[in-house]
Image 1: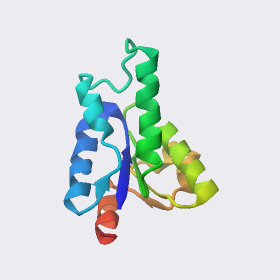
Image 2: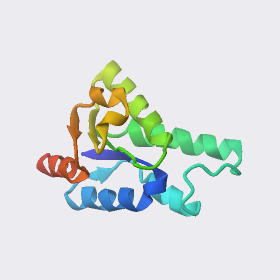
Image 3: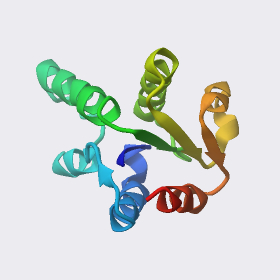
Image 4: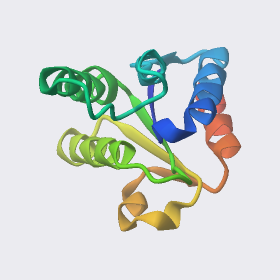
Length: 136
């Protein structure tokens, strides 16, 4: 399956760890946004970047990442984050309108009422990974 991993760019090591585990169990990543963030010195929201470039990155995340995925996995961030919640909202819109995207959420799912709309909730990221492994 194609998996999009949403999470905080401030927790890049965690995102990359689970990205690598998802690939190890046999899935593909629809878009490796962590690579893009690393290219910008770990900054997920480079404020000095030109508008057109910020627009390109945001659209790519949604169109090539979320839309092309079969599974969106949100690793609920412990650090402040905005982008991953936008991606979750976008995924929920896809799920509600066409019903072809499975949504997994792991971590502190009480951070938003919208996590209740996910297909599967897991208290631990490792539990969500185990679910993905079983679907291989």
